[in-house]
Image (cartoon, rainbow, N blue to C red; front, side, top):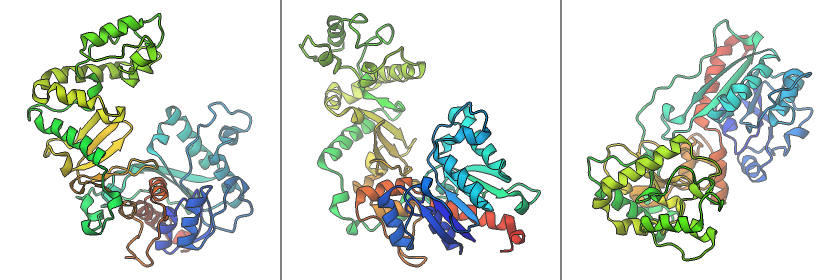
Length: 438
């Protein structure tokens, strides 16, 4: 069958469908760097703007890992078309109406299902069904198909009613095989030095390793651990917004810091004194939600429990770190308490440590997974294996990544997983069978 690859990125859909013998006749993506990689690998120059895509060649399958944009809650006189107007999904439906493909194969983040209390998903489903398709969806992840990456995505399949059975389409089953990140890795001796951690990063991780190794084995670390709350006593009520003088004076703020034993600025400027309070307190414009209060109180209580084992010197040094390095998430359960034996990620929400059976989900921002036992980040080629791109040439020509590491990481974080896509497409083929004459 022939397919078009909208929002094609670096070609996750293309890689999957071409492996099954299908032919791409048109591609589109506004990211010129991704389009360059796409053309280098598949020989197709991707059109830049979906809004200008007119008079497409005949095709059977429309593939799209489209951006999720808010849809109108109200739209009125033009029905579903009106509700999607101004969004890129509207452009997908325009192409559907113009070309009438037999199959729609879409991918998005799992949160799309609940976005706007389910309104967005409902509009998508009903817009597609209105054009004569049956529609199904499922949330799937590569780790259930043997690839060591947890990356849940919402996959949507729609098939023209004349090619459907009386039964529902069934997505491929999830077997949950045992996986290990080590199967993705290059030989240690071949990894360039540029992927190894900086001395400052090693120092920070060693500092948190001291923490996890010196608290009592009977004590479970708070999840998440917010060290900004260790030894703190500032009130959680009636001080928000803390930036407003009439709520709490600079003098009162200094009194609070003194009772907490924190060396504070002698400045009379509120902004400088506020630097000694956690950013989530300083930025609060209304009372703290109950879940955040619970995290704060849990961490304060935890410090009372572990402070003797850890020591105040450890806490003082932690307070010199950037805010993101003052938070810690231990997500390996009862396994060995040694950061360097596990997977690590520097995230805006803090330092996260995870088991070695899966790599954290690749994202299109600088949160590259760290291989603890090698004290280095995963290479782009290793991340590509986590997305099931054939960078080793095992199924033919080797897939070529972007020459820029930063761009390659971003593109892989945005990509559709090849194996999951291929497995779904195989099920689509089995479902339509001889009815499509293929």
